[in-house]
Amino acid sequence: MERVIFQASDLAKERTRVLDAARAGRALVRDKDGTGLVMLPEAQLAVLEGYAEWSQTLQRLNFLIRAEREVSISELGNLAWLRVFDKEDQQAFADELHDALIAGLADNDLEEVDATVAAWRVTAKQLEDPLRRSVLLGATTPDDFVEVLEPSE
Image: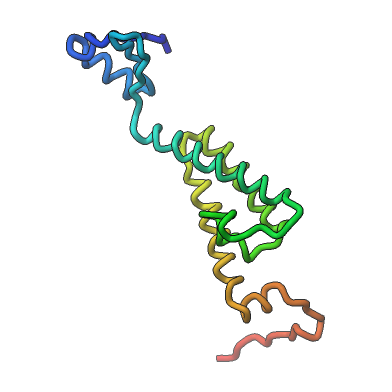
């Protein structure tokens, strides 16, 4: 795709070309004072903003995971729901989030990031309940399992 830099005056004279370039992914406009402006589809901007926000959050989380102390809920901030997990599980979440961010940027869609976070949040919610936590994380023995008979009609 040819890179065209439009002038501010082109917004009036060649608005169709400018908008076509923006719809195609990007329209570069040079303002009268030399400032470069970019027009792009709103969905693409949302992906870039989401990627930036989640990347910053991931960087902060990785720093907190490496801390050799108990991390406070306030330090976790918007990831406070991760407090129910140990550091190993938090690292597993960080690794999955990293992979989802790479895929999302490549696909220009953060659906995988949203799905990853949603799945981990569901698990965190289950672990908040003491009974569910004991069932999910408790030790089991072979005696805990019994053969189930096929139902009769």
